[in-house]
Length: 357
Image (tube, rainbow, N blue to C red; front, side, top):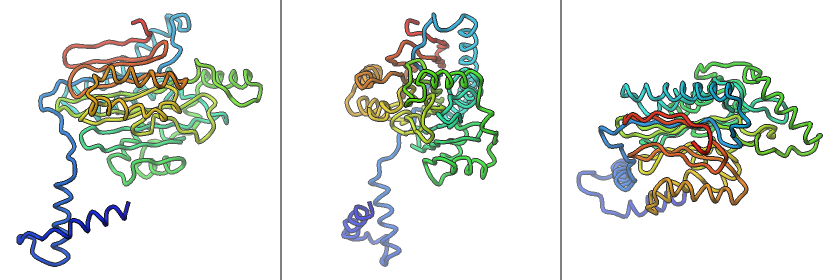
C-alpha cells in the first residue's frame, strides 16, 4: 500500500506546480493534497426531500405456523412493531437514518424473542458472545464489533466506534474495554442468558452426545437488523446478533462483516442480512447485491434473489432486508420464513413472519 501511494505521489510531483502554490515542500504537499482530493470519488448525497422508509428483521429460518403458537406469534409481531415504530418515529420527525437504525435495532436487542442482546444464543462454552455493525450510506462510515460479552447494546457500541473511531472493527475484550472508555452501559454476561437459550444448548449437546456440534436447521439462524432512509435521502444499515447456537467461542459470522451481512451506500442500497453466516461471507452477499445493481443495472429484487440462490447452492439459508435510494423497502429470503417489517412515508406499515404472507 505504501509503495502504491509513493508511486502516485511521484507522478503528482512530476506535474509542474501552478504559480498559486508557490515553491518548496510545503507548497508541494498542498498541491498533492488538492490533486488527491480532486481525484477521489465523492460519496453520493441523498436527494433532498426524499421519502423516508425503514425495514427491520428479526431472523430467518425454519419459521412455520405449526412451530409457533398463536400466543407467541402475537408477542413476536408486537415486538417487531415496537422496533419498527421506534425507528419510523425518528424518520417522521426528520431525524437521521442512522439514529432510526440504532433505535430499531436496540429495541430488538432488548427483546428475548430474538437472537441479539438479551435472548442471544449460547456458545458451546455456555456463554454469550455478541456481534454488531452499522454503516452510514452518505459518508461510508462504519463501525463493527465482535465478541462483545458485557456491553448492553452492541449496536450502540458499533455506532460509537463509527462516530468516534479511530478504527472500524474491534474484536474480543477490546470491544467491551472500548465501551467502558465511552461510558456505555455494562452488564454481567449472564444478563443476556434466557432459559429458552439454555434449553436449546442442552438439547443440542444431548443430540450430539459430546460429538462435534452439528446444528439442526431450526437452530442455525437468528439475527436482528434494520435499514433506513431519511428525508435527506441518506441510507443506513445496522445488524446485531448472538451468532449460532453452540458456536465455538471466537466464531465470527457475517453480521459484523461490512459487505457481507451489513452495507449502506447511497449509490446503491442499505442492507442487513440474516442466515448462514459462513455462506453469506463466502458469497459476499451485501457487496455482490450492491454491485449487481450499481454496475450491472439489475433491479435490486432480482439481484437479491439471485445472490440468495447462490447461497442456497452452497447449502446456506437466510434472507436480507434492503432499501434502494428511492422506493419502498424490499425483502428477499430463501428460507421458510423471516421475521420482518417495513414502513414508509407513503403510508406503508406491515409486519410479516411466514413465507406465504
